[in-house]
Image (cartoon, rainbow, N blue to C red; front, side):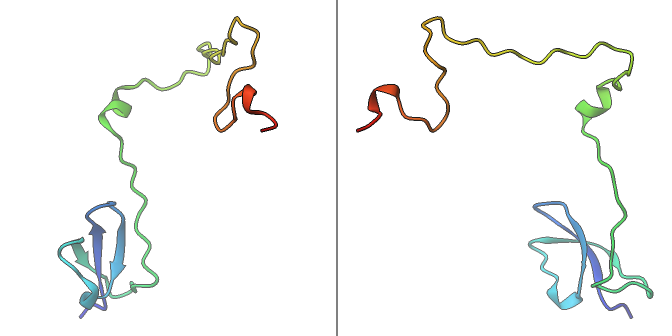
Length: 95
């Protein structure tokens, strides 16, 4: 008899082990019983790399390919400093 089960969390997809009485069908998907040498606290899922279809279609970065230049930001032609998030307008200083 096992001391726990391996489940996937339905919302996040995280795989972990829980005791059988903590299993909730609404939030867990049953994967398998724990093996005799595994424990709930000592369970370590295998690393799994999931690629999205877009990642599968992208070519690998070539070390010899020219790198893209960083985008430049242009300042307004009025000579005013660009507004930053969270800063007050210039006419409200000292009020």
